[in-house]
Image (cartoon, rainbow over all chains, first blue to last red; front, side):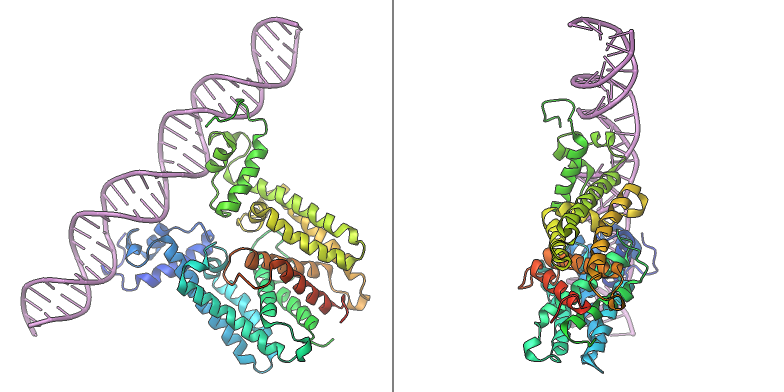
Length: 204
Length: 204
DNA sequence: TGTACATCAGTGAACGCGCGTTCACTGATGTAC
DNA sequence: TGTACATCAGTGAACGCGCGTTCACTGATGTAC
């Protein structure tokens, strides 16, 4: 399998992560194999064991990197709520969808691979950090409402997350019920607008 | 592997479907194997080939039966919109969640197994029938709004479907971000109420 | 600057495993007369 | 009602395959002096 110039790969660890992401994107979240990832990285099937404990460890690293990128994108999109929390929030929703489109392998590793976030402290931390971005954004947005009509930020974040995730799963991929006349992006936007109007954050 | 009394099983086809649903529920949507399903049904690994073309065919039949049951449950829950379309619609949301809880193997086969609904006419028909129930319900509900403020029924159905699916995926299972202080059922209900208020279907 | 040597990051062969699927077969059932 | 026979629904052994993982190994790199 030695297809490269040097005996040492140089950056095998990261190469394996990226090969895995591509592989998942192509083959589905559970059908990826360590052997195939090694093959694509141009090394023998034993080489990955220098960098990962095994198959699951590699998969978890893909998910972890995914959550880091995901959180950063959401944070960048929200941009502390400028110019206005509401538009920033909608922008963040779009960033959610963009991530799923541009990094499908990572998205699948994070949400569709069936891995448990609990067994890996770094993975758990990365996933919680991403979730925090959503909650903080909801918090800032909710502050625009009078306290007596202000919903819990975590609830709002979870609603929007669920809606976004549902749109990705049902309408971005070729899943049953898929192919709607309107694209996923418009679907998420219209849904979020109606929801936010229901919160009183958007007028009639 | 002959563990039963008679040489012929009697109802192997259905037994395999049910064994597969249990298996998926336990092992995840892609990790189920035809051999294990046969083992659980008490027959040799070659027996399923009398009833299914192969692994995928069996999986598709599980999904098809799932969609049939799913559609029937939604229809029954909506009950033509009695006593009022709104409460019937909320009841249908609860039925969505109930299905995911009570028939997880079928739910996973339908939405998480990565199968393509397009290649199987019966499966496609069953999935479209279930989707129709949602759309028809949204239609009936939307009729309560004046025509100039009436949203497309398909859009409303898709929003609610996405929200429900997202809640199931993120908060019903042990997925990242999971474990929220509030249960999936309350999460879906509060989200739907806010959304429907945004449509103008629920007053302040 | 050279050299001895420890460490690192690969190799490649091997293993045991369970899978999906095929095959010739056989026991049980249904049917024609 | 009995019987011959076609059909149906199983068996069990076999196959080729690719997987995850381990192992002793070796080539390349880094470091102490």
